[in-house]
Structure formats: C-alpha cells, structure tokens
Length: 389
Image (cartoon, rainbow, N blue to C red; front, side):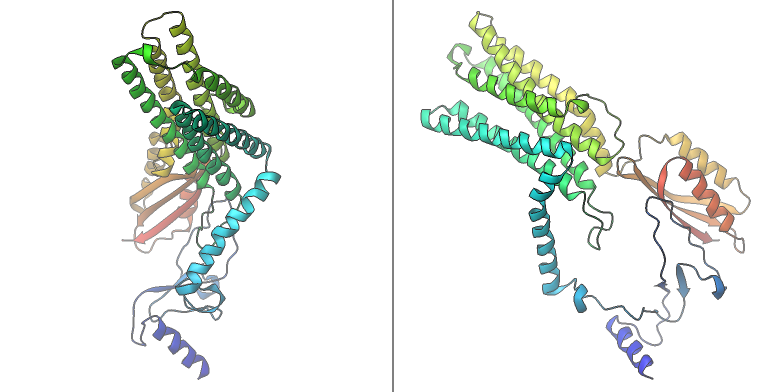
C-alpha cells in the first residue's frame, strides 16, 4: 500500500492519472561504451531479454531513486538552477589559469604569447596617449581585441578538457570549434577593414600620412613572428582536422600569421613611400587584404560547416547513398527516411535514421547490418529507429 501511495504521488507530480494510457518509456540500468557504436534498441515482448528502453501502455514506471526536477541535491529549477550554473561558470574560470599553467605545450606557448601581446599593447597605448598619436592608440585597441580572441582560444583549450555533464551532455569539445570560427570571423573583418583603409588611402592625399607607425609595425611583426614560430606545425592553409584541438591551434596560427602579414604590408608601404612610389599604401593594403581573405576562408568554411551541422565532407554522398541502397535491397525493408549525419567535432561523426520494416519481421539482423555499414564509413555514434508498417 505504501508503494502504491508513493507511486500515486509521483504520477500526480507529473500530471498523470491512473487512467492515463499514453505511451511512455522507463530507463533500465545499462553500461556505457564511449566512442563505440551504440547498441541498437529493439523491442521484444519477452521479459527475459528486456531492452534498454521498454514500452509500457498503462503508466510511467519511475525508478525508485528518481527525484522530480527542483527537489533534492540535483536541483535544476529555481534557485538551485541559478546557483549550480553560476558555480559551474566560476569553476571554469578558476580552473582556467591552473590548466593553462599545467596544460599541453601549445597551451603554455599561447599563454606566453598572450602575455607578450598584452604587455606590448599596454605600452603602445600608454605611449599613444602620452604623445597624442591617434594611430598608436588605434593599433593598441586592435591588438587588445586580438588578445581577447586569443584568450578565448586558450579558455576553449582549457574548458574542452572538462567531462560531459547533465547540462552539456556532449561535453565541451565544441568550444574549440567555436573559438576557431570566432578567430576566422575576426580575420575576415580585418580583411574587410584593410580593403576600406586602402580605398580611403586612394581617395585622400598620401603625403599627409605620418610614418611614425613604422616602429610600431616592426615591433608588432617581431612579436607575431614569435607566435608563428610557436605554432609553426599549423602554418598551412589547408589542414585535415583529425580532432577539435587541430582546428583551434590552426586558427591561432592563422591569427598571428595574418597580423604578421599586416605588419609586413605596413612596413613595405612606408618604405615604398619613402622612395617616392605613388599609391604604394593602396597597393600594399590591397594585397594584404586579399592575402588574409584567402588565408582564412578554408578555416571559416570548415568551422562554420561543423557549427551548422552540415554533412561531413570526409564522407561523400555517393558512399552514403550506397549504404541506403544496400539496406533497402533487403526484402523486409520498406523505406529509409530521416537520414541525418553531422560532425560534433572534427573526427567525431554522429548519425540517425529511421528504417521502416514489414510488420512481424525480426529487426535484430537488420540493425546489425545498418550499424556495420555506417560504422565502416567512420560514423561513431548511430541511432537507428525501426518502425513496423
């Protein structure tokens, strides 16, 4: 009687009555196999081999240790929700510096590069404010914004080590992809601003330009060359990303490389102006704008495609279509629908599809075939829904 009373209280909390006949599922204990294809789910009427998710047509079976949302130590709503998330954010920020100091070789290099850029931009800002040079102040703010993006890249490297939790069930690895996309977007904006600056220099008289920025450009070039040396293994335009870290490291390398090209272009323009070459600044800034645009576009497309959950470019559509044809060739399969495949991060492909089979046919061999075909293509996580028609 006591068990029935508790069950009635739980059903009442979820708005379910005794006569409610909605279809529901109860979760059974199971083991987890990371980075392996998920065990297919099949529905049987034999209780001796009960699946991971079982059907019930009368009521919702709630595990004994379950607490409704907002109760107990696992609060998700109300004050518990806000305090838990705030604690999580504070924990990430607090662990940022510790992980940066004890992280990988590239994380330590990026930390020192950010420190060097912050020191240089602070000194440039102070000199610009003291001497009244607007160009130095503007360049200092540009470097400060760039340091903020590099700091976000370092934060993404540190936070991506955190294991999945109930708020972020896929983990934090996509922070690295988001960081790479942010860096690429900033470099595209820098390319556009350089093109506008070149157009502005073409309209106005170049003889009015001040050449005191040559010292700043040389110093900035030396600082950025140190960063290029730190990430020299990623100093290429097209890279095959095997994991999320590769994309983030590549974006950092392209960031400092684009800044180096910009500084070199300013130095070359100042030298050409000093020897009397007409429209030298327009030519150099235009070339730098085009170079930065071509340098960053592959990264922008790759990172944006992952965030938009496009089909993995490593898997041709012909191979996916071939798998579909092999499955529909079976006599017990009527149709395949809602086939979706995307990359969570580089190197981790997820897929889901729905297979309609003839009523009364066994689906165990079919599910094994589907998992085997798509696993051979490199799909780590695959969800298969089998419907009887």
